[in-house]
Figure 1: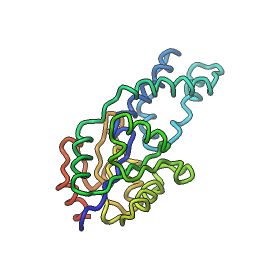
Figure 2: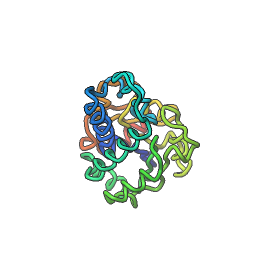
Figure 3: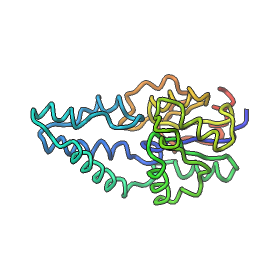
Length: 221
């Protein structure tokens, strides 16, 4: 089975934004004398909304907090941290190799499309992708629902059996497999303890992944 397309997740896979959003919120928790529970945070990574972390903090401190203000502060800090991030190891090499071979490329993410566009533009990768599908493209439906993957495949005009997803979270793997795709998982420092047994291949870094291996994953699935 030929490999016609690679569909990437974004947060935590192309850029290490999952750590920066955790850091931004944890800093607020520390200001209030607590820490953001990383184990709880891991249960929602790869979905959307960030859980109700202000309410959890409110219960810890035992008094009312301004949820909107806390959200706004975390977003500003997250964007500031993200602005200095480079692509994770192996991302650029894999994207360039796929582009050179004529393999079509897309991003399917639980984030919003403008977030994908702005960050890919900043790191010089925007022009390499044929389609960007955030949750806003599918009416707000985020992973583990398969909708963003199905939308990406539709935009590319590629059948699921001829494409591979590259993911960093168990929720993302679930979404990709539900869309009928082969999936390579690249756990990061946030998601590493998760269950990736549904993935077709699990690796430590995209720096060790080759196009030849992706062809094998699609053929094997």
